[in-house]
Image (cartoon, rainbow, N blue to C red; front, side, top):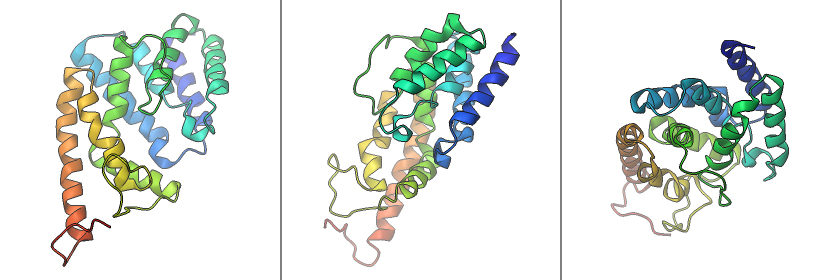
Length: 214
């Protein structure tokens, strides 16, 4: 099987196995991450573009948020799929990326000094900030029926509302970029988060002149 056929097969595999995910983690998220990862890799010249594309396509196929915290069967599914379409040679490399890409994964293992991981992880994190990142955050919050904002929440001890998620994760991502290209893109997108929050609080506290602290 040639590389174009392998990419096409991987696209179809991803589409079939991400059914039921919210629209912030759908095919279009995968497509954006693929484009970002290829762009970053082109600028940084770190890894074979083919394996970047495969890893970006598969990076969210095993998402613990949609697997009740049990990722094991998903890793086996990906492993079997990659063997089936003659990608055994890069299977373990790609699985290392998938297992370590998540912000929330506290049990990281394998090789963290892998340029492939750096590139795809930067791309995935960039899609979580900026205008699209804001849209995705509120989409997922709605998907989980989370409140938009809880005024009594304190920064650093949030976790329940979508605005709280900005402080738990999104505002931290700029400083977590692995590559110079990722950092450059993140600067602009981080400012969009900050500007949004400033406007959000103005509207939330309209007429009071002060932030409601609960």
